[in-house]
Image 1 (spheres, rainbow over the protein chains, first blue to last red):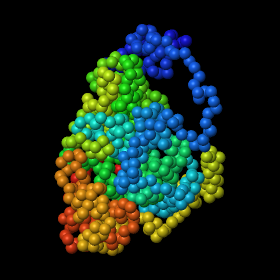
Image 2 (image 1 turned 120 degrees about the horizontal axis):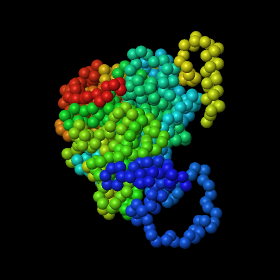
Image 3 (image 1 turned 90 degrees about the vertical axis):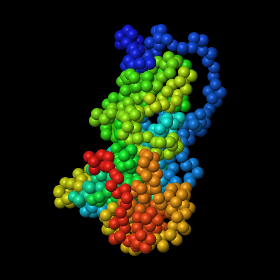
Image 4 (image 1 turned 30 degrees about the vertical axis):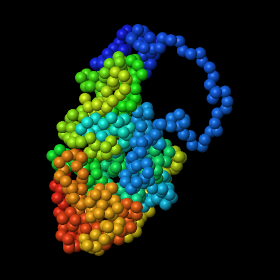
Length: 440
Length: 179
């Protein structure tokens, strides 16, 4: 073992902030140090009784199941699912939220990627689908999926977040709900498709064009205005999601991907792009995603999903079984670039320590952060706070409330009292190990 | 898929480039889109801009709109535009709290948004089945019920964009540098 040599005695588990936070270097690919230190007299409740003798289980003593053509998770993982706001398909919007507390890493599996549809999921025949680019262009053009597929492709990992994600955090009292209920309308995937700029340039952009109005082939023909500047920057016509075709709930057979911009603008089932000299002032941009401010004005064209993080482990609904070493972990992301730093607190923000960032740290993508923590069995309030490479800092909840207000009464957890909350989330670890949602 | 396909595309592009020089004047790309004329886009070209661009011919009044509303809209938006499982289209309180209910009368900045949204998305079970005259009539009915226009005012491509919305000046562009 070389671990001993690398570890300056007594440093790897050095406290770096209050209430048990431990230097993140203890995690940086040096599990041996972590384990070794545990055995070296740091207080630990590792079971002192010897383990049971090992035996063969029934599934080890017979051939297993037939291999399926499309595999699904183990039946023991059946609780790892999205939560549905409209399971009976009533005439209103449907939301399906990602169970962040049951996932690890940074890529959201396709079956668990969040979905919002405003009038059901269309059953689009890919051969019949068309994408038209028109308006202020020299040559209006129509593309089939087959022609789009023949363009040079590009891939990028990008988070996608509903502008209304985390809306329950605007509640005047902390709603006791899981990270899935509070923050489940954000996910992260690898998207593959064609750069929009290639198609726009083929159509020939008129100099007067400043906006593109994107429209879907779904029942409400969902429509959003996007600055042409964004369309020429990093926009993509995405047709693959984590290597396979887009899920129907995520835009099959093609969607607009605008990395870092609010989810609703990433128009699914994309069928039309009209270049114009002005925005359409569509329903979703001038009503739904225009949050009311305390001065009775409202923000319009918010667009950016600002720098944000939340702890997924431990989080509401989980229970710490005993005082011991734990890993605090969560996701951080910013619509303006890479995450540069995540700070974690275990004492409600009195002291902070820098978390380890799991590579790769990609622009406009989930970054997993990790922080070793020794829970001594006493009360603790866990928080994370992210910085991005542009210098933007995730605000505290108090800072958001000061600028953006909070509700006067506790809203329904499925409701959207406002939009674009990117403040700090606080989890309180109680003496019995249960995790509650608090404002701190 | 298809490293070979991408390579083939790239080779094809470079061959085209050398064969035709700059004379094609097209941006670099496979150029696989089919040209389409404006008339053939028309059935999909339903965007209405705030200056009225895109509004079709035709017109409607509140009296006509009331009948259509009762038949096709009231189940979700309530009798006379109030109540209903999917929110009122008439009335609205002050924007005195962040969670205030946003309504046409207290929040929407542009009258054109109403025509655009009704025509593209309503009625919920059968969108894009209303005739343009029906949409104008519904817009007239809803604006009249909200007292934004008179009972007998006619809505058409000329009059609709001129309807004054109370909250027109109520918005702040969040990130001007993104536009």
